[in-house]
Length: 268
View 1 (tube, rainbow, N blue to C red):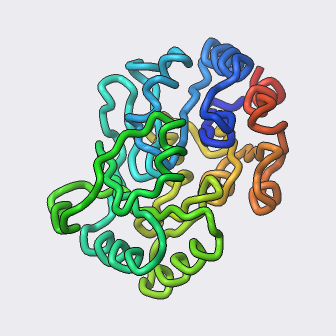
View 2 (view 1 turned 30 degrees about the vertical axis):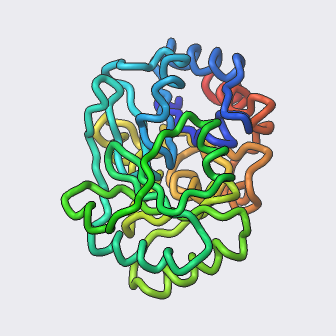
View 3 (view 1 turned 60 degrees about the vertical axis):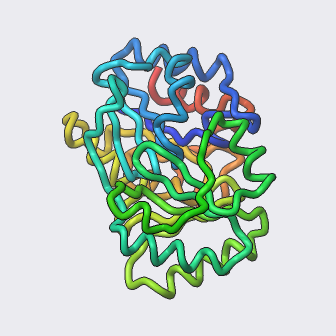
């Protein structure tokens, strides 16, 4: 019996326009009624998923959780209490940022509770609007973050060749760092060893839940960290080949309520 279901959001639980199907809502509610925890596991901030939590009846609930920033933080939904934090050292984040500025990208800097974007692009702003993401434009020095908790730094450009060039430059500049791709437009950088999987296992240990008792559902490269660590890795049909390769089950597409199908198959 799986005790935790953890799912990526964009292009997995949510449809392309950022909405969630009623079938997914109903399946999650049925699993919750059986005592199974549903833990959103996203690269985004926990603050951007509050409306989703309301739809799932998990908003402000004690003993319910969200994994954010690709494993950078785990919060309890009641008062967004931080229970796990895996931030980037300032020097590491600044070095990555400085490299990113050399490319044709916009750059997101995520602190614990805020998003700043350097050189925001119109196409990125349109995408973020569909996700209800708010931000401030970064116009000053990166040094302003010296006393902040920096969770991750990412770049956006729809051109894969550009993202790969940034990926190569970052990985060449560090002995250890975690770089992943997400949503077909982003390349994300976290501290070495930090990913969605390490965070959900940390939460599982705190709750007395083993890796074998966790089902994870995802679609993209930044989901591999959790899919390779849990007992039941699931890919949606729109998942990239690398995700499907590690999955034990491929569920229907994001727009076909694939998460609900997986929950029906293995939990209900």
